[in-house]
Length: 115
Image 1: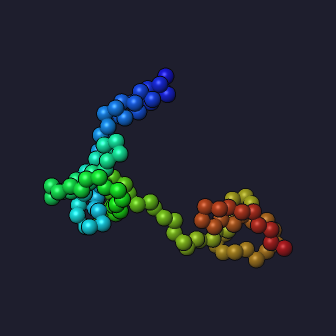
Image 2: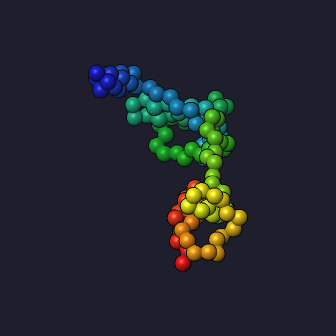
Image 3: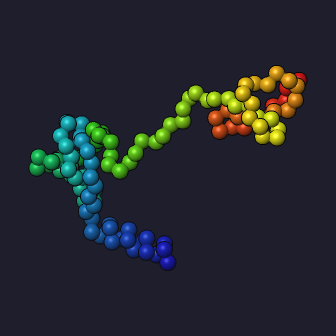
């Protein structure tokens, strides 16, 4: 059923022939208001009211960041190393004694054997 509706929507799209898309700027530094696709013809409509019809090729670049999309949070590059005993007690520094310890670096926890 979902595929049938998808094909019906695509057919209606093709029969109607015109689709509009928003853009930011064009290589001539004019602000693009709308891009219109009419079968095989592409028209760029600028904010100042002018238009380029039958566009064969263009480069559109972004001036500002899009609204609603936030920059991803990056992980800090400095990772703090914390040592624990096997029973879960936190140690002040790297252990000097022989034994098995847990070493936490950032999000990674590893079992370490000191000989």
